[in-house]
Length: 353
Ligand code: NAD
Ligand code: TYD
Image 1 (cartoon, rainbow, N blue to C red):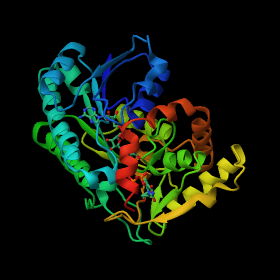
Image 2: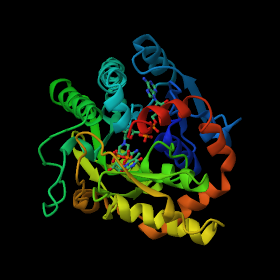
Image 3: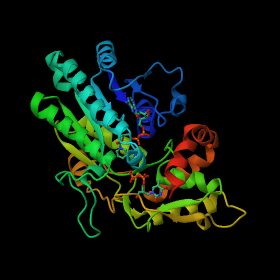
Image 4: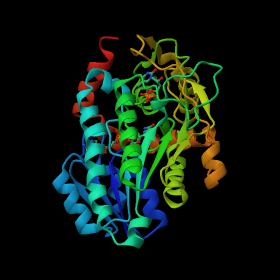
């Protein structure tokens, strides 16, 4: 048996592929365009492992998708490939429409053609799992209940609008064509291989380099943080036992303000790699806010717990400690991703703030 994973060289996708092959011998065909966010190094532990077939290619390439599906006949597709960073979507939304909307459409059409031609047993067992975000639901007031699966879609950024569009396509392909889809909407992840354009790895990397820790606006925005390994176990649960056509919210029951997050990262670094210059929190700098910045996200993850028995294994304290330790032990990985185009992004996003 084989599964096709898209975007498996990115942050969550590479954690998913590594976890999958640590727990199963089922082959993974990993299709990734290796954008700035994709990194073959994340998968170095699988070099020479015949259970991992890496394919460098684009999800908008229909001919390639048809060829891969015909050749490998996967029993499932797990779709991670996306442009994923809100700030980049503000500076350049085009790539988000291309990959997140057109890419998901192209993958759905290729999956539909493949699935339609399967024999009855394989057809009913086939799954298309779409990995999405809580950001499609928009922003919550401070005292509002957390997002449930029936919360209205109110995306506010080009990123979340493109993910919302892709969720709607997935839903429509199920209702119209009967494609056996599953959708999961997850809160903010953190953990190993997280690209340092996102809050937590950026703060770790900047602090270690003695650079400013840029907090947008007042830093009172709230996110619900989940360790990436817990997201991977939730996806495995949904894929194995989720009801076709359903959506499942995935979250860590861990709402915190950005300021709280940054202070915890600084405190851990003070403990594990103290700086001769003094506490890392001295580097915190408030910068101009993100346009349209969503104030609060929070996930009500009771459905996946009730139906599939999933709960996160890590607390934030255990997950953030593992994460900081991972970055301290992987300076070579950090140095590699900080080279080249990363510097251009830092200039684009921070120089004018
Ligand atoms: P990422 O940006 O780290 O990785 C995305 C991967 O997709 C990269 O390897 C990139 O090379 C690949 N890719 C991009 N465009 C492609 C294309 N056209 N064809 C093939 N591959 C392409 O993203 P991530 O944080 O790992 O997120 C993965 C998925 O999870 C995304 O769909 C995202 O919306 C969703 N998600 C992320 C979070 C989070 O906190 N990071 C939370 C919830 C949901
Ligand atoms: P991010 O990691 O980009 O995830 P998302 O926008 O998808 O939630 O940002 C998390 C929060 O941290 C968000 O409220 C924006 C904020 N933030 C900063 O304050 N400073 C930064 O340099 C970055 C990248 C994010």
